[in-house]
Length: 253
Image (cartoon, rainbow, N blue to C red; front, side):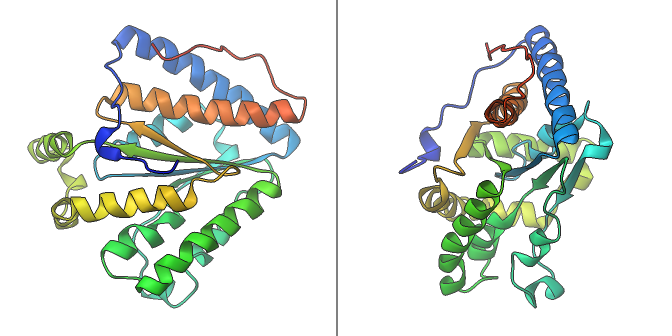
């Protein structure tokens, strides 16, 4: 991925409710089947989820784990580093959360915060976030070489859709809690975050650990696309071990 060009990204089409429900159920059951194989064989997997604010990351996580055996997965929501985190190497808090045998770990934001929010907000010095590209690539290659399945997903929406979702949250008393001053401040620095994301793709989209960039203006499409990426990654790993189960093999409409 030489240049992501997020401004030109195809956002994915609308998916009907009927197609969404059919594919969601099929692929969630595929993921459960694959998870059972990982539990049996001691496989390990990581799903890193990044993206713009209000791009649907949390909703995608919910659909990923909805039918899974809770004994076999963990979800970590990663915020900006607090003072204790800043006193340690930035990867320390992730080393503590790597998957055990038989476990799927989902990071709702991940070690890429070093080259995204920490870069844009000045929490890391330029020399530190520039060095992080090499450190992250080394970490990911080490994990993959050790047998960990690694999926990296970026959920992208355009500025108009983000504003629409912000306003929707403010109008809904059950969603208002999701909004904070940070969201508006980050939106004001949209171009800075896009520049950071595109450089991140150029530096860390590697053969052992590629990025999957998902156009997320349509929530149903984005959730299905994310689910399909994870199913295909786990199925590929199972196939290399000679243990791939029978799956639905359906495609997005």
